[in-house]
Length: 609
Image (cartoon, rainbow, N blue to C red; front, side, top):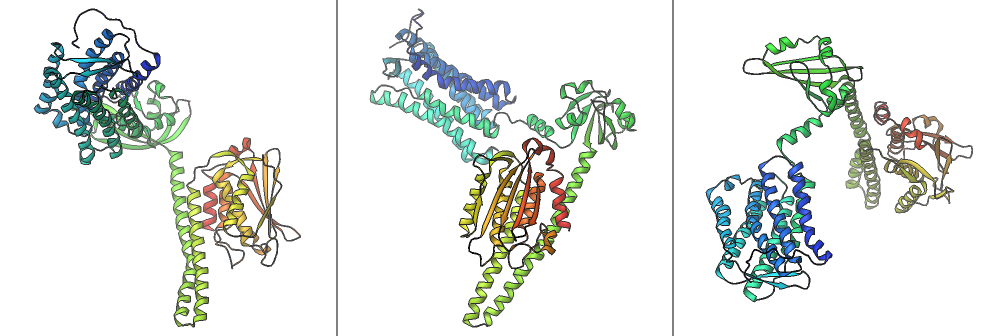
């Protein structure tokens, strides 16, 4: 059917669900277009991407209206309009891909200009002269499908579409395999490559090749399959900030996340820029920083900015009391760097601020961790030395002994090897818990007990856990750390049970007061001698030399200190050993827990003892 005439056709559209289904891909790309245009960085890459989305959305909208029009005249009008933006989809798509992969020289080359700009304009004359022909056929799914004819102008038009879209797919896969041309992750490039390839291949096959060469009806899959490109673009935006990344934005992100406050002021000491840290140090909202007067505080510091201005370059460091926006003084260390122009006149002054209190606290924590590491390595190496020496001696006996003695040596070597494994496991646990970020959540006590039972079953332990705690009993704590306390106290009870007792038992009780919860772990094991009970929670301490690593109860005590809990040991008259863990209730837990100081100090005390 030849398109012609100037009368305005009926613009009614088909069933609502058909129209919505046709427009879903358009709305996806429209949202991406608006986001990149208004939130993205002002780069040539994003400019090319916005132009590509603009022509793609224009084609999707008019193509959807053409598919869902109720009248043939309306469908013919929209199909004709959709052909114009179709000409430039591969143009801006290829430009975007080349810029994305770093091949900007190709974009600026004359060949690219001829193929991707001159050819579309020449091909557009086919549409203007109305020599392009196609047939509109009613579809069972969509209202209309357009099948191209076989005349020469129509074949030339679609030859251009096949060549340019095929080139677009070629360049995107070339960018994926030539990873040296870009700095993005290959997974994101791969997703974009599939996002471009799927609609191009489906569109060429189902809407051009099959109708032209097999006389079959065209099946419009291109518009719907563009969803693959939309989803790939959204993933690239989310995972790699592919359209948001630009040096200006990256520097701003770095400055806002620095540990030091960055302030830029002019000659009048008016703040021109300040990062988040500086805003916190000055105790002023960033929007109110230009109104903050720094002259008084700078003058009190004894720094002569006039002298700094005369010297280029000039860097001065000073420590002084800074007046904040809340009229409070804060001790800070400041580094001043004055920037001058060619006439040696000062333009701006860069001030780097560091809170002295936080700085000293960080230095103390660094020194504390260094002491912890040194002590920990010394005590660990010393504790590992015994089983290693034991294994060396047993190996010597193994070489010289009889077959019976060799079997005994193997058993003893296995015991020493298990001891080394237990020590290394405990060391890893302490290190892991030291780095753990505490999260207080409601926990069921019985769920913790079930985990302990499961662990003891794995160890083939005969220890029986007895409790009368109700199923709905809740404690607010950190799930990982509290579970370790339960498990370690259960393993400790199993490790030190009486060898000849028939029914080893661990009883777990829960007592709730108005502002705290108490967990009591009682067992009928061998107990702990009174003379060593004061050293019970020390690192590498073992109440009985035949078992344990000396890390279990130490780890439990360290976790309790970290969470603000109290753990105590007692022994009843009938010989039962009890550990009591006192947990503040949820409303008082935040006041009692000090992760930055309590946990660190207890760790250092244990290691330096």
